[in-house]
Length: 292
Image (cartoon, rainbow, N blue to C red; front, side, top):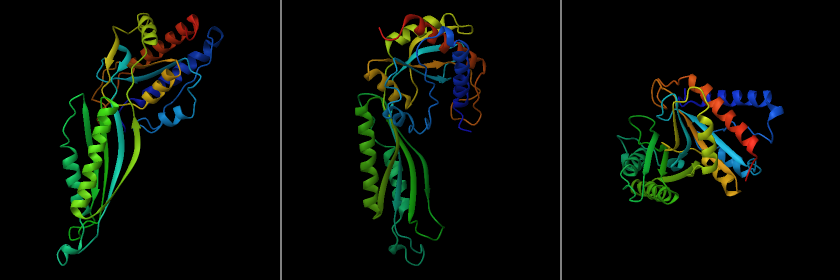
């Protein structure tokens, strides 16, 4: 179980699709429902944006459940997404008998351990939030064998592209340095990335105005800080760069445990709130026209 709420997001998307079909005679324009693939590894949205599927969009709305907001609370435009780079590291050394000839070995496990510890010691950036996490480290073949292989899954984050570049560059230097220390080879594979984005004022105002009409919403925030990274930012920026409006809605939901926790579950009442809010927003946009 991934435990983040994406099953709820898909359910809301299907609910919105049903309402669009039911009210197609009173709506105008073209509607695209995007079920974002590979979001958690930040691998899907940039490829979709680069394909041009958003290039004719006047408005783009992303949505996420929970994110430390309770049921009944809605944020019309999340801000401050962290830029991020996801990457894998593979160290290749030389195996040897750990008792008879350890001097003939080149220990990939120790290189990975040195890199992991030192990456977590990267100095924070003075201009904003910076993050790094070594989430996976796999190495070794047996207790009496000098480990010839090691593998890590790592992510860096930063409040701006400048800070993310700093974190990633320092991580790469440490990875290369650990390889030289232990006489092993290192290869880095980038697996995904996301940028930062700000929600557009016009669509945020529309959503906030429509939220007043939605049953179950008790508190409305125009903006709030995002807690992490999301590659929907690539789609937001694509639409904005072409003159459109984009936002990222947070639909609050009481959670049984935090995101990415094995006991995670969301309050299903929030699904109905999200569907109603999005559909009312679409009706308002259709009534008032597209770009002004």
